[in-house]
Every structure is written in C-alpha cells, then in structure tokens.
Image 1 (cartoon, each protein chain N blue to C red):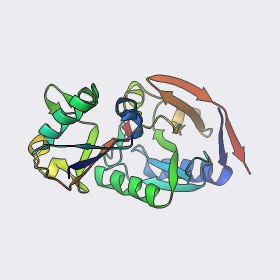
Image 2 (cartoon, each protein chain N blue to C red):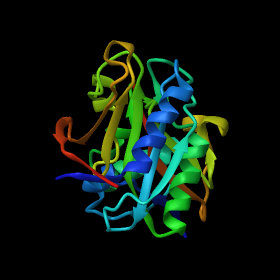
Image 3 (cartoon, each protein chain N blue to C red):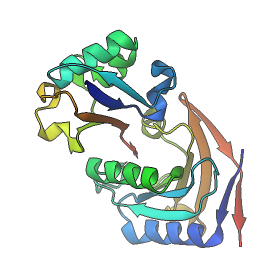
Image 4 (cartoon, rainbow over the protein chains, first blue to last red):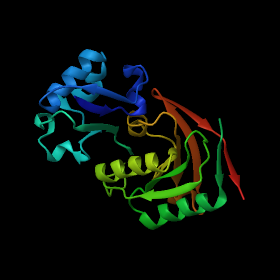
Length: 90
Length: 138
C-alpha cells in the first residue's frame, strides 16, 4: 500500500500523462520529495522557497492541507491526496 | 478555435457581473467530458470578494472537481468579470490559468463603455493568450 496522488491536467506532463500516481512519505513534505524523485520537476511546481505555493491547493482525504499542518501534515498508507491549481485571477 | 455559447448563458453571466459589482464575479460552464460543449452553467462564489481579484474557495473548488468527475463532465468555460478594465486577461489571469483545456471568458461592464458590455473568450496555454471568436447561439 502507498498513497494515491491525483494529478491535475496541468501537471500531467511531469507524470507521463498519468492522472493518478503513487507516492510514499510520513508527511506532505516527504510525499512531495518522493513525488519529485519519481517525476522530476514536479516539486518545483508545488513549492517555492521551501513552502507550498499559494495558488496550489492540496487536499488529504478531501481536507485542505492548510488546516492539517501544511507541509507537516501527516500522511499514511491508504490516504488519497488531490492536487488542484487554484482557479483565480485579477 | 471558437467558443459556442447560448445567448441565455451570456445574458446570465452579464447579469451576474452587474449583480456582484463592485466585486469581480466568477464561475464555470460544464459539458460532457470530451465534448467541448458548454451546457451547464455553474456560478461560483468569489471567495476573494474583491473588485480586482477572484478566487474559487478551495473547498468549493474540490467540490466542483468531484462533481465534474461524478457527472463525467469537463470544465469547458472559466469566466470572471473585470469591473473597471477591459475584458482582456490580466497578468494575474495569465499567471494562474491552470486549466489548459478551458475557454477563459472575460466580461466587462465598465462604465466607460456602458451601456455596451464586453464578452470575450481566450485560450491561455503556457502563458500565451489567444483570443478566439465567440459564437452566440440563440
């Protein structure tokens, strides 16, 4: 078992067009590191200066990670993580 | 590419932009996955409640994508209003355009062109904006 990560359309070029991939880690931060080791470059789209990018939304089992501890949010086997770019503009 | 859209959706979106003025309004139009047809209008709350910025609330955003998946739909149009400026994508609009398959619609009801309004559509892919014709279906 590992953690399912659902990938939005705009990031699928990094994951060979897969819309769902698997990754491991104990925290979201670990998970992103692991994702980036499998799919080079994806980390940079999620993080800036070591923090989660403001306009990327990440959910663990449908809960916004902003309420779960951000990058330190715990993840475990069987969890489902969804990444969605914000719909925003000015 | 072209955006085909019903007259009634155009009218509803323009009415929404007036109703939510002075804040930007926003929303989507959905259609069956792979069809490219704008058939189901879903206005969204502008969680920023701002005259110069819009954002779908992250919880609403997740709900939208789940609904789209459940209904086997796709997001065909993402629209928002510019309250005082031209209906052309701003740098922010371009920077945050995260749905490469969507038609990005901008409307403007700015006073200087009243009573005329603008309803324009664009593709925004990899930072490049391409305006496309809008065909309004009666």
